[in-house]
Amino acid sequence: MRPRILFLLLCSACMLVTVTLRAPASAQAYPEAEGYMGFSLYNNEYGANRHNSPGMQFGAGYNVARYLQVIGDFGAQFHGTPIRWTNGKKVEADSFQFLFGPELKMRNRSAWTPFTHGLVGVSSRSYAVSTGNSTCTGFPPICYQDTFTTASETGFAWAVGGGLDWSTHPAISCASSSLTLCAPS
Image (cartoon, rainbow, N blue to C red; front, side, top):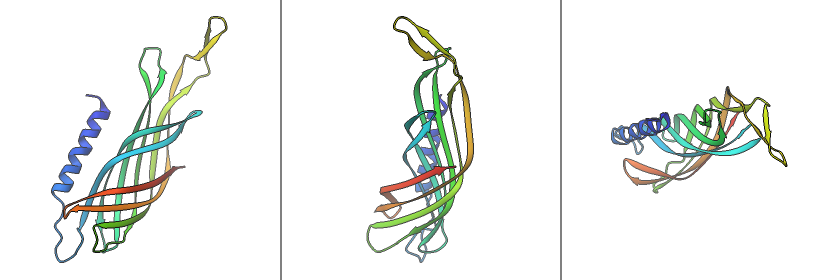
C-alpha cells in the first residue's frame, strides 16, 4: 500500500475516534477537547515553478477557557510532478508542517462560531532539483533535463488564520470557511 494512502486512512481513523470519543461537556457549554481533520491546498514553490499541492490537515485542541483553545496541527501535502527519473518513476514533491499555538473562539448561542489562530512550529519539504545535465535531440533541438537529485528543507514555520465553525450536532461541527496562511522560513 502506498504511504500516502496509508497516511490518509490513518488520519481518517484518528478523526473518527476523536469525534466518537469526544470528552463530554459537564457544566460548561463547550467541550473540554476537540479534534479536526480536513482537506488542505498548499501553494508552494518547487524550483522555478509554483504548484498547488493537495493534502490533509489533522489536529487536536484543549480548551483552557471558554474562548481560548491550545491546538496542535499536523499537515501533509503531496504533489506529483511530470518529471520522471531515468528508471521511469515520477518525482514527488512533499510538504509537512507541525504547528501549535492558541486559537480564540468567539463562542455564542448560535450554531456559528468564529475563530482565529496564530501558530508556530516546524515545516519540512522535499522535492527534485535538476543537476544541470541536459540532453538535446532532433532538429530543431529539443532539450530536457535528464538527471535530478532530491533535496529537502526543514525550518521554522508560522501560520495565521481563522474561519467559521458550523455546529451540526452537539458532538460534530464543520468548518464552513477556514483560511490559514502558512509561511515556512
